[in-house]
Image (cartoon, rainbow, N blue to C red; front, side):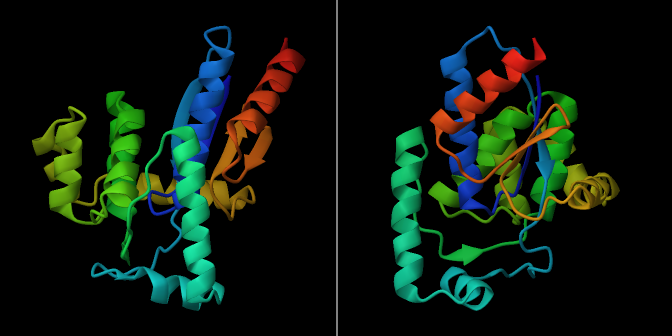
Length: 210
């Protein structure tokens, strides 16, 4: 089974959704062979390098009050804890395009999943800037990727065209919110679903395919 996980490092529900999907796959076990790929989506493609205060940005973007945002953060912390992901404070929102370029490269290197996990933790747990070259290089080192190769990518525009092409492709298919989980290029599951929802859908699709 091929699974495309369309998401952004800046998206907290993407962390919940990924960990829930992985828990569902653990429950199903080795009977279901899965090829999991991460696809790029930017929630804030125009975000400047200096980033923006999280509360101010979300209040303006969604019209949410400070109380509503606090309630959402509490729900995220609970949902994250249920699937093994820890949310910390996230005072600023940053640009994630370079993170997506490195994720594209990590896919070629066979370490995309490890880098995705590390980037989500760096941003949502540790409040590190996923647009900072220093942070990105440190995270690459943490997952065993070649730091000098990563540095060469960051100071160039390598993989920029590939990432933008993939972003356009998924948007052309109607993906305008994340996480979006696309199974075998045909079936769509959206949102940070609980493990039970992913498990039920995956078992049904696997049975139908068989």
